[in-house]
Image (cartoon, rainbow over all chains, first blue to last red; front, side, top):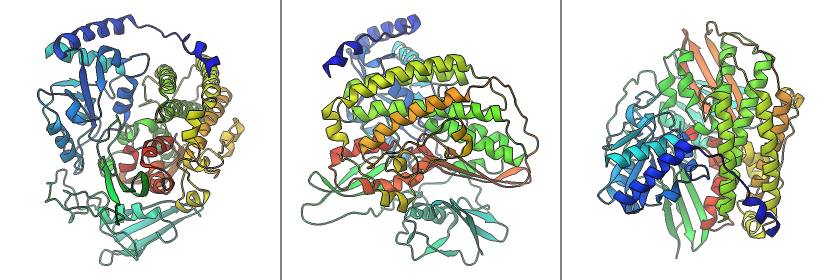
Length: 160
Length: 454
């Protein structure tokens, strides 16, 4: 294993100056407004899984959201913010609201992707209820890229 | 014979049950006053979800079935409506009173139930897993899905075939290109067009790139699930780089809208990237093969036996890792471009992990052979009435799609996602394992919830 150690750390990443600037301001705001730590609980209420994949991508070395003090948590009771994605299906409705109710106040909801706002390309069917949880901030696109999500978080942090 | 799908559609004089096997298709027409048919589950256990789905959607009764519980209709769902019938047009229904669902559970001294989901600890899709436990050991697992049920099938009905393309793209984000390839094949059949050879090569290229991205992501996550986090850092870095290349190819990180009537692919820069990726993955493989604590968890875990693969008709990585030859790409077109089926031996987590590396390397070889600069396109004309079906191989396995066009509009749209079969065989893999192995086994299959639920 040791013989691989050195090579691993030689990896270089392409730097995105714009992203670095956004991250710098976001880190400052998280420190000012959230005591340096912002916990997010992600709930999928009926997406295609692309929004989830993009949120997972936020942890990869290119975006590395954790270094800003922003992290995804396993329980709503540990969370400050709920990320909500998907069309809010009939079968997920009560579970998503349960989850929201379990988040201690003060709490905020950030909608990820177009589905939450207006179902995106989907249309209303009997199996779709649509979201009724009050959303603080919308991050649009189908799906929003990791950079879109980080910029969205910055806008949210500025407004809060 | 392998059962691929059992689904229903309403005709003027009754409800037709369509059984799709790998070698033939059988149809049975049930009259409206006697909606009963014999179950297939004695021979094909994975027919059970298909039949429960048909019961929920059409009100058909399957005689001698061992399980008649609702599947799509959860606790608050009205049980007296049959939404896929043509006379059902409501787009909004009300919640009914809570009806408890009767979970499969094992009783006995010291045996307890662990309910997991629908909302999970990580950033993943919703689904419920009900374990019967004796201490750490799993006695039984029932998987309950369809929390994400959006009624895609009904949504597509009555629309022009072209106009549902954007919906089909977004049924399952990780398999978008596979869905689009199957759909474009169906549309080509419906308008009597033969796709140009060079375009087929380009479609196949995008499908392989999608597979590569998905497999690379999985390799990182599977290793992360045994606590080996550096693999996730490296895997997620490589999959991000692959996704950025995918944006250059298709204009979208997930390839939504990628499969078009005309395509230009910059093969030269794609192949440059793939050569780099191959080198990185060879390093990754040699590195992780050398770490005993990882293999201590991978080996002997989550064994899916050949017997179960055949019995359930498992497809995709799950089947091939057990050594069973099932792949929608197993045809002359792909073989001419260097397709070689990769097979595992024992069907354990380690086999599925290694298989993903081997499939990526084979995909890279194929893409090099797919290189073409011919710019043949085509145009869809009118879609003729009729029934059409197509297959494609997503990164999860064989995808089956069916479309019936009537008066130029979609009369019935049906998809059988590979996950729909594989989820049902999943519970057979956990009996020798402890509950802490469950996330690892789950990730080693990496099935879709959205595609399964529709």
